Amino acid sequence: MLEGVETGYEEKFDFPSRPGLPERIYLLATVPRTGSTYVSHLLWRSGYLGAPLEYLNFLAEGPYGFAHGRAEKQTALWRSALHRRTSSNGVFGVKSFPLQLRELQRDNPSLLLEVFATLFPARGKRFIVRLKRRDSVAHAISFARALTSSSVPV
Image (cartoon, rainbow, N blue to C red; front, side, top):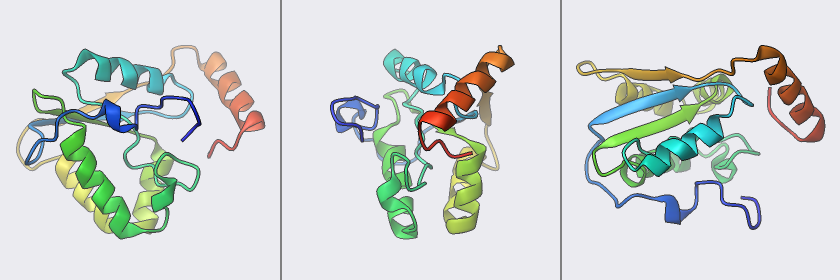
């Protein structure tokens, strides 16, 4: 984590732990530089829409980079997030980029199956929110600038 910067992954952003699976789960599907972190924080602040962050980002430079290449640790983190990041009304959200799902498929396919079974139950509603930036030129410029100034994965 960044020293002195709140990212939303800190313990103080947890909801009271809940037993069992959330009643409603949604996926915030997006790509980098769309404003998804800002949107995630707004959803968390509502108190009713979970805390949709990148709970499947196990890339070495990601928020859970310490679990990179450690399948058991990744599974434990996912299961813990389901209990700690579900709002009191039973809603859980997860934000994910295509690269993160692709990496998970390669490195921990059993967890990816568990995640999909949780997100897309045989019965019940499925919620996928696609977030994209309206201004595609501004998005491209923002992404290019991020690539030149940091190690943003493509």
